[in-house]
Length: 214
Picture 1 (cartoon, one colour):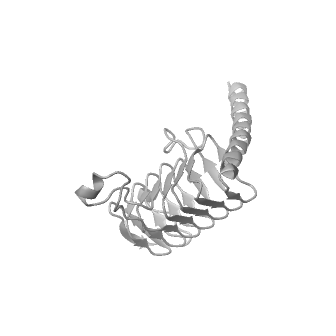
Picture 2 (tube, one colour):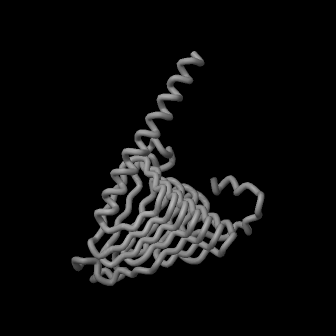
Picture 3 (cartoon, one colour):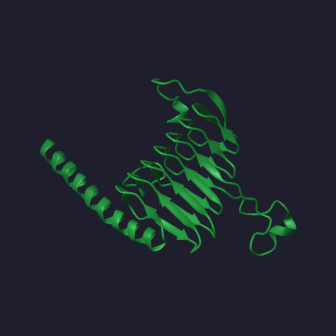
């Protein structure tokens, strides 16, 4: 029985490596076809969903890791990693960023700092999508929809299913709890959770995050 388990484990490791090599190549080709700048060491496991306007800009730093699908991360594994960029949008992803099964809608600007981690099934939107005015919502083209840049600081961590709305800013090394909805500014080094997200406590170096954040 142990021999069978070892054989299955070895097979799973080999399959994961082959899958990562294949999907990394596919993602690299698709991103480059849209003019993306890509640093060395990109790793992608699973198919990446990508829609990019011809005037949008994508820059991805060195050593980034993207998990897309159940095989890479069970959290949000029923979906895929998705990037949706509109006209003139700018998506900037720093060095050594990790993302899993997240959806980023960028119609103005989304910036993710070096070493940040975006947990499974997170949603990052820099737009309201629709106007708050009923008459404008009825018109084609979503006139009146407000947009504002979203920023995630270096080494920040977004727990699974967190949502960042337009204008959100998460400071360096801050932690956003699982399922939290961020509408404003999360200061550097703080732990926020809830809907709407509120501060729980400053992050203490060397201490494990709260259970709600995992």
